[in-house]
Image 1 (tube, one colour):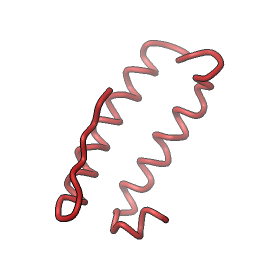
Image 2 (cartoon, one colour; image 1 turned 60 degrees about the vertical axis):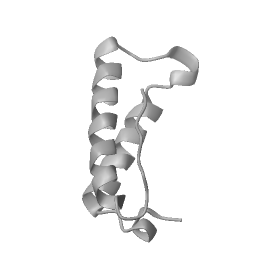
Image 3 (cartoon, rainbow, N blue to C red; image 1 turned 135 degrees about the vertical axis):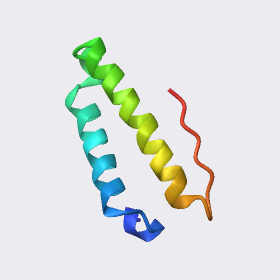
Length: 67
């Protein structure tokens, strides 16, 4: 399935991809976060993405975000 299958906006789709890419670039499974600032920024963006996702799917899904 693709984000468009759920009616997600292009903006949200792009944000999700960028957020994932930031996580993937950190190579967390080997070294952990490159800095506390990178981790904090990633978590902050995740919370913001969750709010947008919640708004976009509110008619058919519930969204919860946990750090």
